[in-house]
Length: 76
Image 1: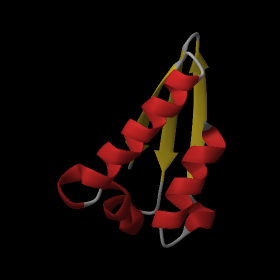
Image 2: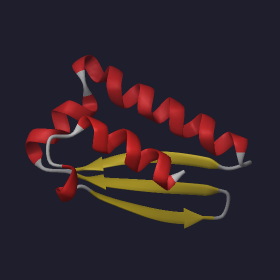
Image 3: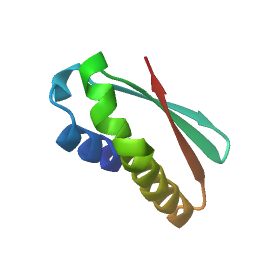
C-alpha cells in the first residue's frame, strides 16, 4: 500500500523529493501521515477536495483487498 500511495502522490506534487510519508500500523488499521511543501498541499487536496477524496478511496480499496483498513492524513 505504501508504494502505491507514494507513486500516486509523487506524480501530483512539484517537489517529490521533499515529500515524507510515514506509516503507523495499529492492528488491522494503518495510518499514513503525509508531509509536503506548503505549495504542494493544494495540489494533493485538489479543487473542493476531489483529489484527496479520490486518493483516500483508492487507498481504502487497496487496503480492503488485504483485509485491512487505511487512512491518510495530511500534516501542515
